[in-house]
Length: 261
Image 1 (cartoon, helix red, strand yellow):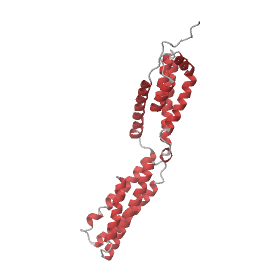
Image 2 (image 1 turned 30 degrees about the vertical axis):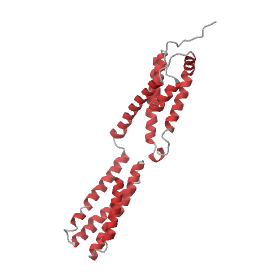
Image 3 (image 1 turned 90 degrees about the vertical axis):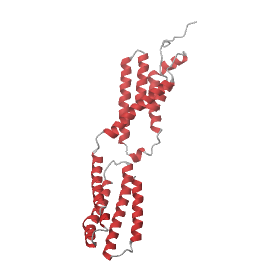
Image 4 (image 1 turned 90 degrees about the horizontal axis):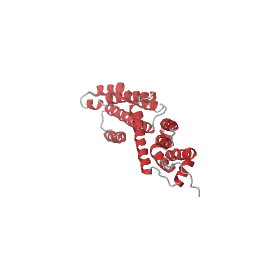
């Protein structure tokens, strides 16, 4: 009887399933590394280097593309869909390039690296990805869009700080001085703040969080404007009959501020 051929008896590989597990955890980077290790076992280091390089480049393209997708779209995609897609693609690639070798290796009951080891490598790749993403998000220079938004919000904050000094003057300034302050500074600046937020909404590629913040800031600004106009009316009429209405408005202002915190 002819002994069946077993050319890989003394070799050790990562199976398709092990590579799939690592890929799901750590993305194409993990897949590139494990495929490289299989090539090394086959004494094909040059092809292994190419596999690792492809894994790195694919990872950069993949996650770079994800960052370019608007948040309102990406938020609608279930978290596991993307990993399942690229894991399936990698599985098919491994099947095509090493499928026959790995299947024969298994039939001959030869040894494979454990899936736990593959999962551990996936976790290491995930850690590397996390560091890269952190660096991109928190250390890279702001885009022009975010610089424009920050400039708008800085002006908004300046107007807010200046006008809220009105509350310190209520009990110390004359009615004439208070009305002058309201007409020439306070009310115009809150009208300006409303326009600032409306313009900020027109900036392209803002995240869903910033757009939601703008909704709150617009409501907050409208309430501030309403309050200061009511102060003007109360001072002009020299009456306290609007006190309850002012108290209600300030309660609504506090609610909007809580949403921002």
